[in-house]
Image (tube, rainbow, N blue to C red; front, side):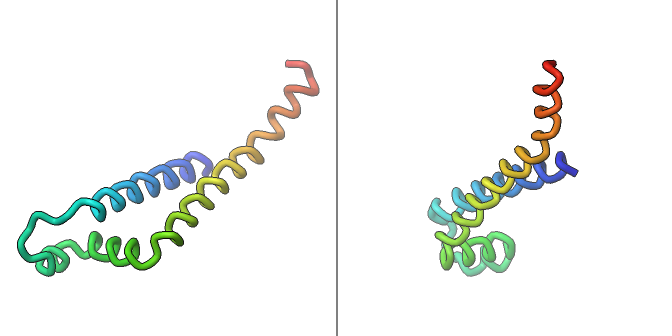
Length: 87
């Protein structure tokens, strides 16, 4: 389960970075409306990014912090036992 959550988190970060790059680069096509019809996921990402840029960044930061908190809580019992036994 933990491995799946880390894979999900890092894949989300990769998608977020791709969206940031694709939004920040200008389109080289003549008609952007046609491109938005053919690429609905990119269009949705552009709309979400333009309208709530700060909110998306806050959610990514919160997910990042939550990932480290869960990782800490998951590994805490093992390290506590190691320290108690002197291993």
